[in-house]
Length: 397
Ligand SMILES: Cc1ncc(COP(=O)(O)O)c(C=O)c1O
Image (cartoon, rainbow, N blue to C red; front, side):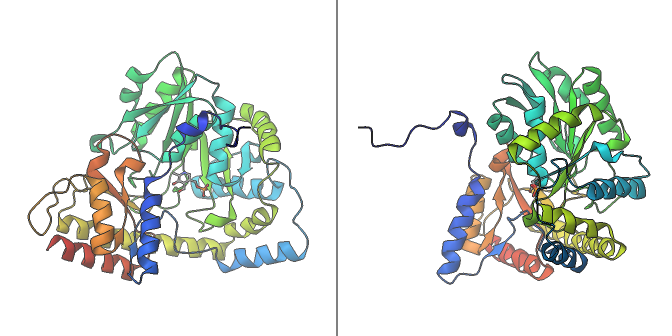
């Protein structure tokens, strides 16, 4: 008799674990042994849902609004999101184009399942949010990473897409502001990218999960460019509701029926309680809280960026959004004058020797991955100051 468990599908091999999870495990062990660790690794706001949202969730639970909802989401929330685009961007987005999902993660799974057949390929910037690669693999499709350096603000350009386009290419998926770089794509560059890809009949997916979190200019949406563009958004980051598992897609109308069928079959609907609670996100009191938090993130960025540069980190492009700095460690020297082998070694040593946890570049792609680390400033100013003090002492500054 064969005593081992039946084998898994090959697609599991294509889904790589996050390297940072190993570091976070090690950080946990250090903390249990009494060490203090400052975490700059987590891509999760240190804020939670504001009071009106919590009250709305309690009311939804108490009144039993916890049954399945339509797969596309409750009408009131789809309408509230449609109004949000009107009020913020002066855009008319029909509620019928809004698809409520289980977080931006659910949105990515739905869209890539709907758009990619086996053998089809999606173009992704390198570096990018790692789950994009893994979701493409998990739906049996392929991805192609396109090197995007500081000169392109780490964003995909029309010029870079052109030579990479093959008979298998179906479209592009970008994030703006980006995880891990915190950089937004410039409007003209986005317009050119959309034109080029749409002219080829390809899809353009823009992950706008950090849309509300921009610091040097007003938030923008790729929906303003062309109704054939689809955007992904979420209540996780700007709205501070990571664990509520709620997001949305605004899709071209022709895609909505297929997205509905897929969501009916893959997970029936997003959390009903979360949907009812999220309606309160669009009340004036909540929006004021979100904007105050945005200001706090801006202040943190304004502290962290010059402090890192002062310590010798290279930050070639000012991160103007999200809550990340993608910093080049290749010119850093240790107290003894030596350089680091690469960002993976740097991240491990910094954790063990200085008590600061951050993410090495290899979680986000291949291009110059050993040069970069991602630091998250989704933590208090006091912790950021302590992290800078520790890194400075470790580097002998
Ligand atoms: C760029 C990007 N997209 C999508 C997600 C998934 O977010 P959620 O599923 O919580 O909405 C994240 C989370 O960190 C992200 O950074």
